[in-house]
Length: 107
Image (cartoon, rainbow, N blue to C red; front, side, top):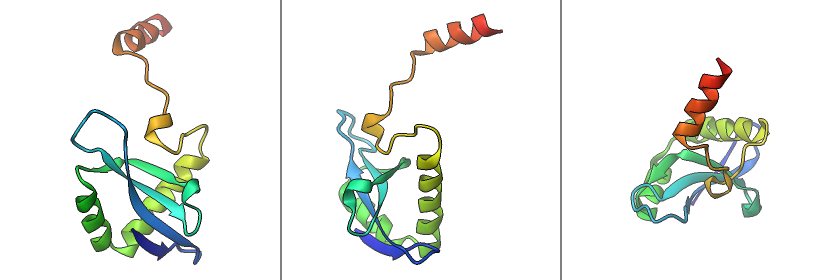
Protein backbone atom coordinates (compact mmCIF):
# COMPACT_ATOMS: atom_id res chain seq x y z
CA UNK A 1 0.00 0.00 0.00
CA UNK A 2 2.75 2.46 0.91
CA UNK A 3 6.45 2.12 0.27
CA UNK A 4 9.01 4.00 2.38
CA UNK A 5 12.63 3.69 3.47
CA UNK A 6 13.72 2.99 7.00
CA UNK A 7 16.54 4.87 8.73
CA UNK A 8 19.11 2.60 7.05
CA UNK A 9 17.77 3.30 3.57
CA UNK A 10 16.14 -0.13 3.13
CA UNK A 11 12.83 -0.12 1.26
CA UNK A 12 9.79 -1.37 3.19
CA UNK A 13 6.08 -1.59 2.48
CA UNK A 14 3.38 -0.77 5.02
CA UNK A 15 0.14 -2.55 4.30
CA UNK A 16 -2.89 -4.14 5.93
CA UNK A 17 -3.91 -7.75 6.18
CA UNK A 18 -7.33 -9.13 6.98
CA UNK A 19 -7.55 -11.43 9.97
CA UNK A 20 -9.70 -14.53 9.50
CA UNK A 21 -12.24 -14.09 12.25
CA UNK A 22 -16.02 -13.88 12.61
CA UNK A 23 -15.51 -10.52 14.35
CA UNK A 24 -16.50 -7.59 12.16
CA UNK A 25 -14.77 -4.75 14.00
CA UNK A 26 -11.01 -4.40 13.61
CA UNK A 27 -10.43 -7.23 11.13
CA UNK A 28 -7.64 -5.40 9.27
CA UNK A 29 -4.26 -4.96 10.96
CA UNK A 30 -0.97 -3.28 10.07
CA UNK A 31 1.88 -5.27 8.54
CA UNK A 32 5.32 -4.35 7.23
CA UNK A 33 7.44 -6.29 4.78
CA UNK A 34 10.66 -5.61 2.90
CA UNK A 35 9.95 -4.34 -0.63
CA UNK A 36 9.87 -7.39 -2.90
CA UNK A 37 9.43 -9.88 -0.02
CA UNK A 38 5.76 -9.93 1.02
CA UNK A 39 6.23 -13.37 2.60
CA UNK A 40 8.49 -11.80 5.27
CA UNK A 41 5.68 -9.81 6.86
CA UNK A 42 5.93 -8.37 10.36
CA UNK A 43 2.55 -7.87 12.04
CA UNK A 44 1.56 -4.97 14.27
CA UNK A 45 -1.74 -6.39 15.55
CA UNK A 46 -2.43 -3.52 17.95
CA UNK A 47 -3.01 -1.19 14.95
CA UNK A 48 -6.38 -2.21 13.47
CA UNK A 49 -9.02 -0.92 11.10
CA UNK A 50 -12.57 -1.91 10.34
CA UNK A 51 -12.19 -1.77 6.54
CA UNK A 52 -9.44 -1.98 3.95
CA UNK A 53 -10.39 1.49 2.68
CA UNK A 54 -9.81 2.97 6.14
CA UNK A 55 -6.45 1.20 6.38
CA UNK A 56 -5.39 2.55 2.98
CA UNK A 57 -6.43 6.10 3.84
CA UNK A 58 -4.61 5.98 7.18
CA UNK A 59 -1.41 4.59 5.66
CA UNK A 60 -1.47 7.26 2.92
CA UNK A 61 -1.58 10.01 5.52
CA UNK A 62 0.88 8.54 8.05
CA UNK A 63 4.18 10.37 8.36
CA UNK A 64 7.39 8.61 7.39
CA UNK A 65 8.58 9.15 10.95
CA UNK A 66 5.55 7.25 12.31
CA UNK A 67 5.97 4.42 9.79
CA UNK A 68 9.65 4.07 10.73
CA UNK A 69 8.84 4.13 14.44
CA UNK A 70 6.21 1.42 14.12
CA UNK A 71 8.48 -0.67 11.88
CA UNK A 72 11.25 -0.58 14.49
CA UNK A 73 8.78 -1.72 17.16
CA UNK A 74 7.68 -4.61 14.91
CA UNK A 75 11.28 -5.58 14.16
CA UNK A 76 12.24 -5.52 17.84
CA UNK A 77 9.20 -7.63 18.70
CA UNK A 78 10.03 -10.18 15.98
CA UNK A 79 13.61 -10.39 17.27
CA UNK A 80 12.39 -11.14 20.80
CA UNK A 81 11.83 -14.68 21.97
CA UNK A 82 9.31 -16.57 19.82
CA UNK A 83 7.01 -13.73 18.82
CA UNK A 84 4.82 -14.85 15.89
CA UNK A 85 4.64 -12.66 12.80
CA UNK A 86 0.87 -13.01 12.37
CA UNK A 87 -1.98 -12.85 14.91
CA UNK A 88 -3.52 -16.02 13.42
CA UNK A 89 -0.40 -17.98 14.38
CA UNK A 90 -0.24 -16.61 17.91
CA UNK A 91 -0.83 -19.21 20.60
CA UNK A 92 -4.13 -18.85 22.39
CA UNK A 93 -3.71 -17.48 25.89
CA UNK A 94 -4.79 -19.63 28.79
CA UNK A 95 -8.35 -19.07 30.02
CA UNK A 96 -8.57 -16.54 32.83
CA UNK A 97 -9.54 -19.12 35.45
CA UNK A 98 -6.44 -21.17 34.59
CA UNK A 99 -4.18 -18.08 34.77
CA UNK A 100 -5.67 -17.12 38.15
CA UNK A 101 -5.22 -20.64 39.51
CA UNK A 102 -1.60 -20.75 38.27
CA UNK A 103 -0.70 -17.40 39.79
CA UNK A 104 -2.43 -18.27 43.09
CA UNK A 105 -0.46 -21.52 43.43
CA UNK A 106 2.80 -19.71 42.59
CA UNK A 107 2.42 -17.22 45.43
